[in-house]
Length: 525
Image (cartoon, rainbow, N blue to C red; front, side, top):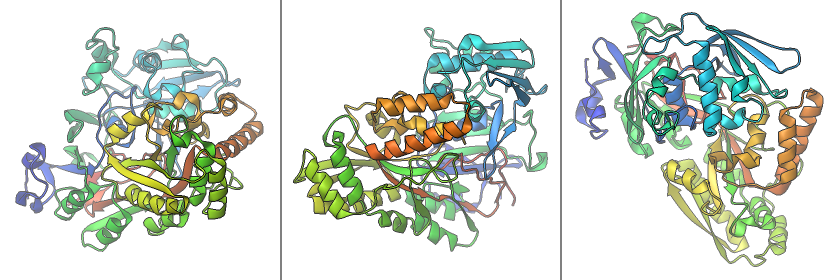
């Protein structure tokens, strides 16, 4: 049946009667509707990334390389091949000849050079990945299809980060510069990409609508006949209307659902669940700079009081406890001896050494509004802290509010629950979360301070002796655990629920919590 987008695009109630009739269509093609709880406040690919933001970025932009599959592997994309020099200093990329931006301009070496230069000079978002090893003047467009990067010193993770440096059209960006901002204001809500989708409507707090780019240079894996007309990302804060929307076929794919919701949905006809072990860790970040949790002994007391079994129970068994800051499966991961588990005797011993030997304090625990699992974990923590005479104020806030608060030690909550997915397969992607340069970012909300650990993290980034590098990361893991900047929680399975007519879903553990790659997806019905 031919339905329209009028209810969704007008922001009509999710349970409007007309929507029960079937999936969205536009002309003779179908529109995939995806729903999650997290907004996309900034679309600029060089300024911000989180799961919802990166899902849209990956729709409208391309990078030189791309992560695919499980286990994750890096495949050529805008670059059809590359070479690295024996000394690990020079990387040369050769671009696909047919790649074009949405406006028809060629994706050439100058666009690549400009995009990396922009990311480095803005010094936001993705800049941390490369800025210590790559200078803008060392990026050279050799010819129209060849770009060369010369690093300041060897950097083992370089290739693992390249997939997240999206290429923008310099002509469009420079045409929209405001007061020398490198087009930052314009790219907040506009796109200048070459990806499989074109931005039609951007309302980062409620709805983002993308059209497929029929002339996409890479083609369509499902074939032209099955290509979507587009994709809609609907931001719905609460789980109940997302679940109802999926049941009524007004939404095709949903994420950010509780394990109980997923179990119930799996029993319904026409719905299937995707459930995968991933790299995403869940931790409770302590504010290590201000307030009571600046006291390491209090942090250790709380960590030893925590009911870790509750973490697994809340996920109905679909999770595994962390035994290190690094997820299992990542190169250099070790199981850190003595990582806290529930031990009230130890908890009370650490509390006695703290500035609050009798407890009698109230702490704030903040989670993302609308996420049921972190809320329930907060309740488990509340119960765990009662024997220490510590009260807990559980607060749900929108993601953007929580991250803004956590960006400064002065405003960060005592404890903030957060899911973090490594952005690459190299151990640097996790270790750097504990570096001083990560303060202000969502995974740096602990404002952890240990200059010796910072030095080790910086040194490990440039090491070329692999056994020595892995040994360094093993010591980094031990020292971070000893400082207890967070409660090292669990690694939940990654889950989505979708209608059974949705095809082409491809899981990769490198993708963030709710993120999917929309490019290979389509509707068969």
